[in-house]
Length: 323
Ligand SMILES: Cc1cc2nc3c(=O)[nH]c(=O)nc-3n(C[C@H](O)[C@H](O)[C@H](O)COP(=O)(O)O)c2cc1C
Image (cartoon, rainbow, N blue to C red):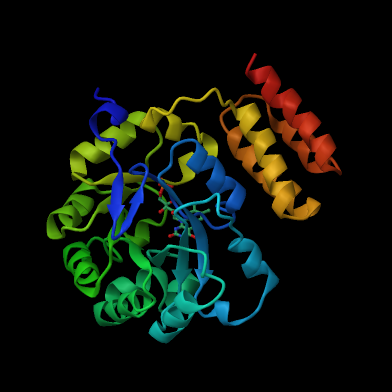
């Protein structure tokens, strides 16, 4: 089989911004905080998105939001994802101080969660193209680069992928990401390559393919079958972030142990100890997902009371598996 890095790897031009590679890390609520994004970027990801943040919620001066949007100049270019359904709220959010540092605003038009869809946000926007268009135009008025992440439709009998992709381009979007599952598939089942291919054929802005990439081979197949301009890794990036190294051919001697220890230090530098430990435990659990016999290790990890102790446990667990 072809290798991704030899066949498909390229820089990605998104409006006036150039991302170093066309292998991107998806927004993942609860995970893609600053330390995680920095790790993915250092391993070769061209961009890593913040988790979705409510456009409306950015009106309130709230600590939780500040934590979600924490970034530094070491992260360049920076991409924030917004969720909502009111164009004026998006415009205000894009022009407001919380997103000031961010170069790219990604609009979430794919979230399938019932409460979100009921409030007309996320995937519900694939049923209202005029409103989706107004949201994109509102974001563009901020002068930022604007991208849209969406699903092909609510279910297989309501596929709107072609017209939705065209609407995004006509409204000024600089790139689109298509998650190849319909809303009723939620996060299960094979993504449908043809839907992503249809979007690629419909527009001339870059199209990124997302869904079900769990190996280097899946990434190659995704590119072959869809003709997309790049791939977006999501859940598999939590399990094995070294996939970015393999897909981009970046040279590194990073191991899961060195990565998790680096993550613990970075998390401590930007969160308080409790939040940093919660984050490191979550990521370490994903890193161990396919390792046999890790149940007691996980229990130990969740019982321990300080970052120093947590690091000692992690060094033992990952040190042993990497011998
Ligand atoms: C825990 C979790 C959180 C997610 N959070 C977001 C989010 O904040 N914004 C978004 O656009 N998609 C979100 N997604 C969807 C992913 O970005 C991605 O589209 C989806 O998982 C499909 O890719 P995969 O099959 O490779 O995981 C989330 C998915 C999961 C499982």
